[in-house]
Length: 73
Image (cartoon, rainbow, N blue to C red; front, top):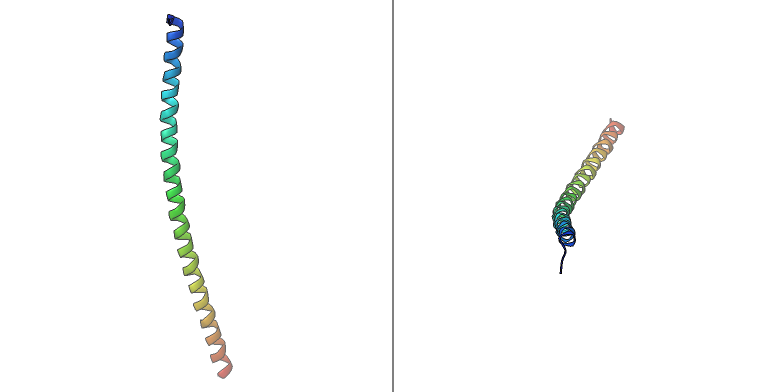
């Protein structure tokens, strides 16, 4: 038979477990959200790196054309 003291301890432990469950659920949601954000940012970074490489290639091509025109002049 549960004494009032043991019942109080059990209630306290139950409340702590409920609180931990809520924290766990919140952390899992936050982790899921952060992973999605990270994936999106990695995609954006890859796109920006690609655009940067394209721009660099175009600038290098322009420089080569200008040098060629300079030598022919």
